[in-house]
Length: 71
Image (cartoon, rainbow, N blue to C red):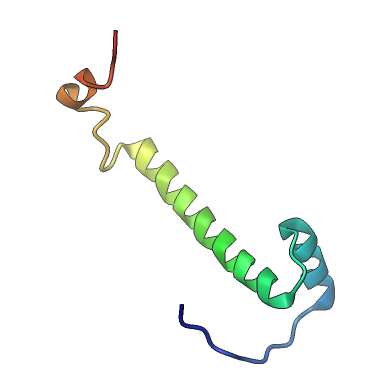
């Protein structure tokens, strides 16, 4: 993992609210958890888009789906 030390001005009320949501205690943990949550949200958004368009999915391929069902 590559990391960097930096200084930022943080809104303490916003930090406290986010810490409560993410159940984190330190500023570092809160920032890292928030970053991960943003990436997870983006991944979910991309999955929903792929499923709604079937883009890159084999679910409409009869040959693939024939092996998916078990009797």
